Image (cartoon, rainbow, N blue to C red; front, side, top):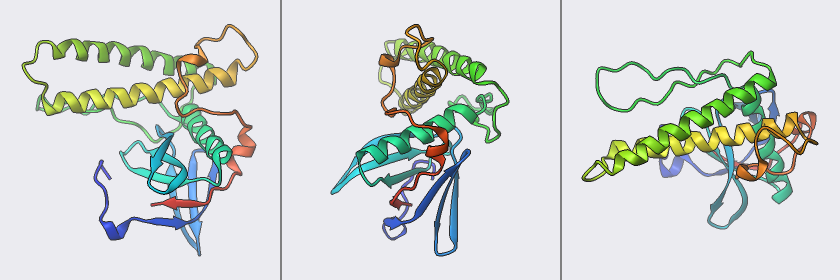
Length: 215
């Protein structure tokens, strides 16, 4: 939680049944259930010691989960399904909280579903990419005026890189979904897609199962 790892005895690889239905990713085992709301999340491939086909699921509240899929194809399908759900249903970020300090405050990420159409949702993601790109470029230019970058500057830089990557992925997924056969799409697939892989139907995605999960 909040970027802090749990204690050694509070984390480990456990086998759960997983189901993605709508924007909810549910893990169940022996009558126990754990739900993750996939708003503003990003699933990407990561490397771990002695384990392959591992997904890093970064949530909107800074929690991170490691999910191990059965094989490479299964991993790619899960990443695509989770990111597509987040791209389709995540509402626009709200303004950053008001503070009387000069410290950087990240934008609030609402849990409510968007009411925008897919076309409007794609346009919103593209707008976010343009906005974050301009802010990131301004932040990099600001570095030249600093004797030494502050910890807050590094935090803001990492935050913007993460958000920019996330909205680029969302825009690419919706662009591919809306214009699968068009040569002239709104965004070039070659520009994005670190976490994106083979497309799959939404019905198949929500019924897919995954094997072990690190919680």
